[in-house]
Length: 168
Image (tube, rainbow, N blue to C red; front, side):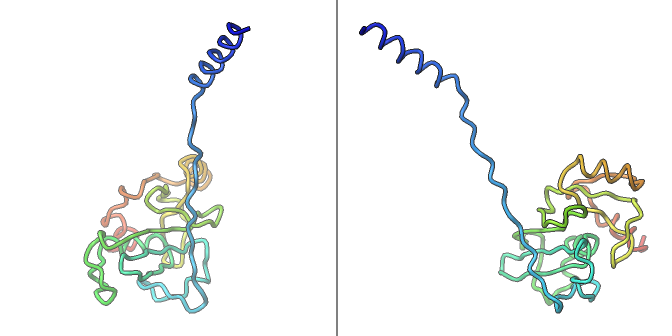
């Protein structure tokens, strides 16, 4: 009887030792809290009129800056000194950058998003980059709407934003 109990305990121990314990993934929730008076700092237009294009940058100072499109957000991101009254000197002053997923309309982290260039989708700011949460969604969108390229956040250059704005 003692040997049986020891055998069961050993087998149980081996079973638990070989079972991989995986931490569960907790998705962070992002929010866009704007109203009818919220204005894009770059384009000076009300952001609520086109909710699928809204983006924001939260600053370490606690201030939040809203944009009418990802293109406008990148314009601010690459040249924050142009809007000196906001008090941003560099991207180190940013705490969180959020864009709206074009298909789900959910706020997503811009730094992990995928941006489709050249699809012909136009925002209130004109030709723009379409943000999507996953590479698969970006590839599907790009294929359906003739996108030219899919980029990660750090691949979107100031030169590309100037090109989209017609300022080469």
